[in-house]
Length: 486
Image (cartoon, rainbow, N blue to C red; front, side):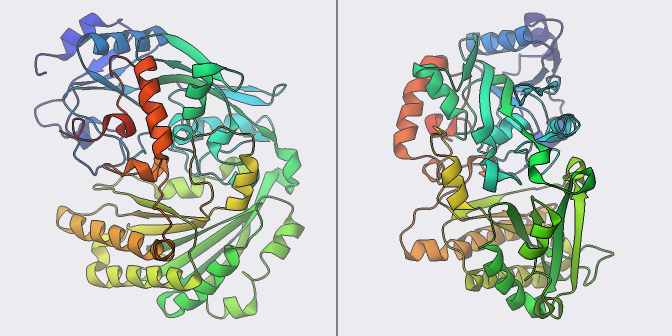
């Protein structure tokens, strides 16, 4: 594949495509500059192509099919379930970032390279909201393909539940549109786009539902009530008690508990802490009632800090985005579980404290986030849906991110990630509940039966022959890891 120089590929594609090939000293991480996850067996791709038009994308797909290459589309670059090699054209969709809000149909249509931070202000400026991801740097298409965790999922479902239609280029180089009104194999393809992961084509655009902000009953400037409580290691048992309470919170309240080393400038800097945060998607008076235990004297006396407040809907991701600067050796260990008691939460928190004790300042950006998922509400929202977002009955999501580690600490970070998975899955394991992970947060070489049922995988294999007969797109559930990981 070394003969495929930038000039040779460029000459075969429209001039509106930009083509670059790796230099002698490039690494995967330096060449794919927008990629966040660095774990896994990836090697450098043949080239990165940046298309400008739909016709450009068609040309790239047909070129790859003719020469036995793979095409790997990228939007935000946050996904971990991504592998490139020297048979891959990396397709950067960064020029497809248009956002069109239709207030009449209450939908938003966005390009295949749109990030959350592109979509969010466009929608809120029109007086609407939708199930966008919790980070501005996340690509909207990738989030929907992976199911989509979002702040509003207790009432509006996973992000993929709000998909109305999608336009994509198939492996044959044809442009098709699939929607909730499609029939036959096209409807099946539409359903697969809702949570089954990537590998079905290049998404040019998607349309999803939006909802009037007024229905939330928020205070002026659409402010969402929230609260943050932080605990030191001496009071992790109090954090575990709060976890139990948060696990029973109403569907319009979202909560997240982060095991982290306290940042500089905060109390207990560098020491292991639990930072618990909750947001209430409704009026302040209702939030005060929902936050009652969080602000109780018994909690306040054992917490480092209790900080109630609010944030504007239009700025809801900014605080999180400020934390998300790219770091080297970023990895991800994710799972969905049915049961996660306060006792198990405490075991996980204590394991994190041990990790900090052992490696101190060398692992300060590693963290574990635990979230109640409102499974009952998600199951109700999904009634009538034909989404391929499996495991909706799981009540909790846990994600560990070993991050910004020097090479000598990478394996320690991975072992910590594996240990957390074992701990938080322990209650499910004792009852024989199968392991489950979220497609959008899976890591390289994941067991795909933990994302999709065997029945769905068999359907995908059949449909892959229809939409991608030349094997232009790689899907680990269909193609496996062996060839792509070489």
